[in-house]
Image 1 (cartoon, helix red, strand yellow):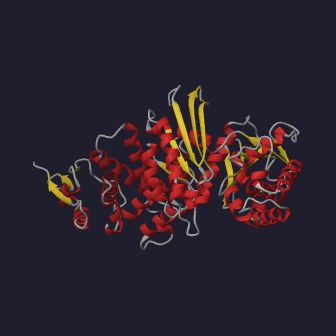
Image 2: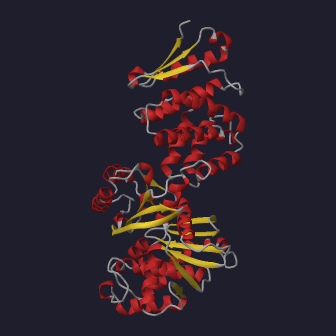
Image 3: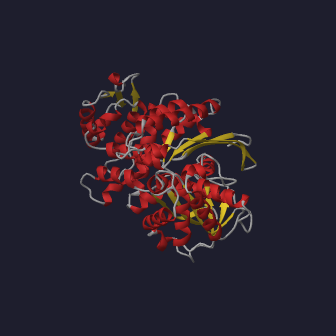
Length: 503
C-alpha cells in the first residue's frame, strides 16, 4: 500500500455508528477525520430479535451520510464491520441490502471473537510498544469483549452478550437510578461474566485497559471531576463516586454531570453496572482508558490484507486445515488445477477483485476435505458446517459462509446451492473447484494443460469444456467423471458441454 493512501473504517455498533478516515504515512495510520452518530440500533430489537423499521431507518440515514463522504474511495480503501446487533437481528439481510447500497461498500458482520481480535489490534497499535501482558475490555451496546494479549498478538478472546444498551433497557427501563437497581444489574452482569473469572483471572495479565464507548465516557467524567490519579485512569473509588451521583440524581433527565454527553446519558447506567461488575469479578484496582478501538483494528486489517503473508486469514486457513488433518498435497493439487481453470473463466475484473476471487478459491481448495476428519460419508456437508460455525480469525461471517458454500458444493448434487445460481462469479468458482476435484480424483498431478474451459455470456449458454483428441481414451476414469458432471449441471440453469478440439 502506497504512502499517502487514504483509508476508512466504518463501525456499525449497537449504540453508535462511527467513521474513521485516515492516511497511511511511513507505515503509521494518521487520523484525518472522525464522525460519530448515536443511532442506538441495539434498542430497536424486539422480543423476536427483529430490528424495527425505525431502527433500520436511523441506520440507513446515517450510512447515507457516511456514503456521501466516502464516494471517492476505492473498495480496497474501506472496511465496514457490524457487530452484536447485526449478529442477533433475524432480519439483518433486509437492513444490509439497503445499507450497503447507501454506504457504497460491503458491510461485514463479524463474530464476537473476531470483534475482540480487531479491538485488541486497534488498542495495541495506539499504545506504546511493551512486553506486558495486557487485558483489554470493551463494553459496547449489546456485547462486551475481553482480550488478553502481548505485543500485537491477541492470545485469549471472548465476547459476552452484555452491554450498555441491553443492560440499561433491562435494569433501568424507565431511566430511574436506585441502589437496588444497580445491585440487581451488577449481580446479573456477574452471572453472565462468571466464566470470565477462570480465563481472565488476576495473575494472567499485568495491566488492564478499557476501550471505546462506556469506558471512554466514564474516563471523561472522572477526568472532569478530578477523580483520577493520572489522565485516563479509572479506579474503584471513581466508579463508586459516579454510581452515587447517578443514584442521587434518581432519573436520567435529572443527571447533570460535567463531561457526560447527552447522547450517553440514556445508557450510562447499564454501562456503569457492567464496568463495576468487571472490576469486582476480575479484582481490577485500576484501568487505563485506551484511545484505540474496533475501527482502528479494521484499518490495520485493511493494510495487512494487502499481502498473503500478512493477511491473518491465510494463517487461519492453515490452522484450520491442520486441525482437521486435511491432506496438504491433495489440497495443493486441487488448488493449482482450480486456479488454472478459473483463470480461463474470470471476466475482466479489476486486479483487486480478481486477486480476492482467486484467493477465496485457493482457500476453498485448501479446506475442501476438512469434513473427512469427522466422517468420509457426506464429508462435504461436515466441512461446510465447520466453516459456518468455527471461530476463524480475520474472516467475517459472510466470508466464511461463502467458503462453506464452495466446500458444500464441490461434490454431489447442485440443487442444494439453488440460491446461488444467479451469482455468476460464485458459479464460475464452483465450476473450477468441482472440475479440479474431478481431475485430481486419483490424488496425483493431473494432465490438464491442453484443457480449455469457457463460459457463455449468460447462464443459458453454460460452460464448455474442450479437450484434445485422445484425452478421454488416455484418462477414461476422468472422462467418466466428467460425463457424470455434465448430468449434474443439467439440473441447473448453467449446463456443461464437453467438446473435442479440432485436430
